[in-house]
Image (cartoon, rainbow, N blue to C red):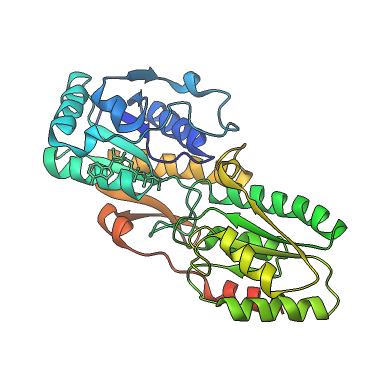
Length: 324
Ligand code: ATP
């Protein structure tokens, strides 16, 4: 393998730049050429390639987002689109591909490999931590810090006005962000899709804490939680069934995906980039690099895509005890 290409695809996450930097520098270290592809798979189809050397990735380890840009490409879902992309890779003499993205991006990479036998390694980049084969996806830790910071700030205003705040956080269908940030932010209740509390129990519990002398409360709600049809209906229900609180909603939204990556994510990105490139150089393909038991490990892409992440039961118990 003499030339490796790298792209970022799907939703962006903090730490993607640090991962690109690591891929580029690991290539340079091993005397392998590196090419950056703009706009994810769409750029592969549109021939948006750029040569990257060790110096071209200076000053980006601390930057959120991805300088290569990310995209969702409908065209790459078609055989014609992937054929165009493959021709471009051959035209540039590229031997292997590093895909930084989520499970959709890995599915694209796997389909591409199956069609053309092109070597692919994935790096899990998403704040949701919803990918099997790694305890931490790239950007998860940064997003947690951002959410905790936001909860702290909302708590200041909640306690000044005897307010009950429902704070919606991201996480797709899983509750990793809500559970971790909820514990760290001292939330009174944490609503996640993995555990169905039920509206009545929620109201009971909030009433109990109200009676115990609490004058303000924070409830962290994962976006995938189904306790209410949406967080505003949840607010309505609680408003009608509880007294003594002014109930408010705050949807944190896309700010959770931005910002400078945390130290943890920068180190993780650096480790993942090294592992990804060196795995390709060892002739491995169709794997995702991940953090398991503090070590860099490979998981077959197929498993990473299909496998379900599990909520940490110990964390769930800690959260139950803390929210007593
Ligand atoms: P996130 O979880 O943050 O949204 P993701 O990687 O899962 O990230 P997707 O939009 O699902 O994001 O996928 C990214 C891109 O991967 C798609 O826009 C598409 O180009 C490609 N892709 C996804 N699934 C397939 C597929 N079955 N065949 C070919 N390409 C695919």
